[in-house]
Image (cartoon, rainbow, N blue to C red; front, side):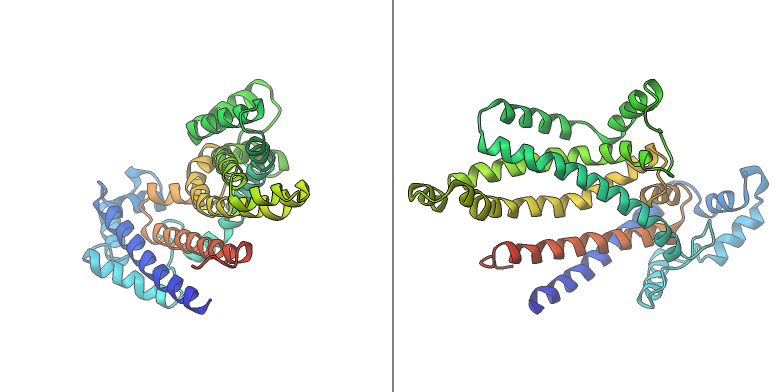
Length: 311
């Protein structure tokens, strides 16, 4: 177990270095003057910002330094557990992330709950009754779910349930109704993936030799299902949920923007628009650490489901 954790820590460091350096490089290749955009975002309209202010921001924030020096300067602060200060909002990056992360976490948890509540019964029934109408329905819903992009599905839900029917709010937070539409939007693709994976896992496990042998020996069907079939089928499902949680964070950028949900996704869009380098770097670092931590948790869950698995 310690070897696994050591390997994960080493791979995490490499991933963090690679992701943050690539992000830093790509940001600086974007067109436009970052000092001007920061000045406009910080002090108001474009015509109210003079050249002296732009040059002052460029020099005071270190934007006139070579790219590799800026990155090393940021990395040195990170090693001191300091993510720096937002260039636009002039607040600590860690504080901004800690304020927004609970909102994204709530949205991601709601999307996962919707996905599991639908995909678990549907995927299991489709696997147990292969070729039936339930199986056909699960396949059709899976194809439709992965085919709909989040921004399109979100706009369709707003048009139907907020604009036409007036059942649910279209944006913002405050009540439990506000989370329904963004959670459905974010959880649809996950529902489709998990249903398809669970169906395939159930079918594959049912054809395994040890399950066939148990049935031939007359072992109680309920015992076969609960103790052997479902447990083996859960392993690929855990893999998918672990990987898809990272995709949920990625999809949250679009979904939170469509529904004006004040989470990390909306904060990322705002940071990229304003060329707020420390905030972008802090968000990338945070998301990478969350993603790697979930992968580690997924690997450890394998061991609980099947101790024979070597990691």
